[in-house]
Length: 460
Image (cartoon, rainbow, N blue to C red; front, side, top):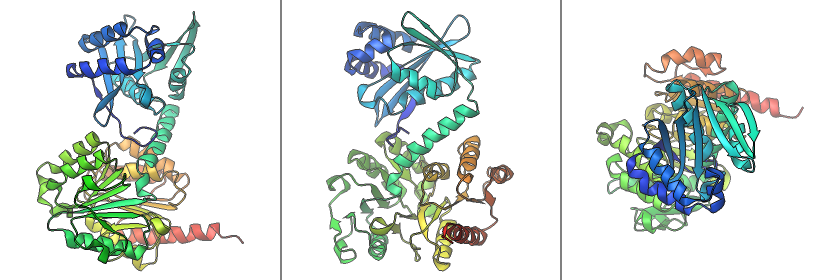
């Protein structure tokens, strides 16, 4: 994630990227070229691109935003066993963390190839690049000769480097998922046979008093259910850049909708496609939706999500077809299992527990419980975090996030049926999380913690 919340894809450069990389070096300013190549020569830049793509001893990564190549990072082996790294980011995307993402990936790849040290030669007046290198907490040596700073870095990500990486990621995730905190505009899209489900979403929005913009595709007479709702023929014909797009349709029909959401500048798409019963999820559709979200530059909740309940006050969005929607409060709740999520939400409503954020993750091909923990990390509205886990993308990362969360926010974990989660439970408990055995215990413990924190905050 970039620091402004936009999605960046970092991948190995291939021969087919040659034209895009030449275009990148053509459109950057002369000062960027001078700082990168110590000369404003575009010819030298093009020669370097051709050599980097052809040289097997050079690792080249490109950073892409909405499918466009906007950065290049290279790592070339040196005779002394070290590797030299260099970066170029186009002017529009400077200062958003792309250089840091490229450096972290190149360091990991170099370490896997047995390289222990990286070297970067930077002009002394290139303060932004020197700051990027220093902020990684990997610098082990530095020398200045004739206006050129030679910085030596370790490829090992020590504790200090991991702390800084996690802090950057938490800020970026919070920005990327801000539409799941205080959304101001929503578009509801109904499939041909799902308009009744979207009607329940509209009724839930009316009940929570959402005062933002609501546009609806596929539900005739939407204004009958929510005053002010505007019917539009298609997502592409909706107005503005919606914070949240909620699609109620089989997953197999949603790939085009995700691409369209990216084209209109939407931030988050929720694919509420009927849970695990959706036959499309058994034929690779979930993975295609994840790829579509990355290409479109949007965040994707689902597929197989039951919806979300997020925000507060006039920005309270209940895009959820369940019978019970709790009021606003301090509980952050995320669940991959539709059954567990719906049951937990109903129990929270029964017990009078306020929910700041409920996200039904479904297949979690993009937004995961880890992402939500990162986004909730510094959110003052989340006073207790509760997650139900079936999959783990990166166990070390999850444990670091758990430790970070538990410093200031109680964390409850309910394991799913996946055997991959079970070995992590003692480690999560050691990190400070409370491991629960069932949904009732999860909600009951959340209630005790919310009430105790409320009492602790009450002036005496």
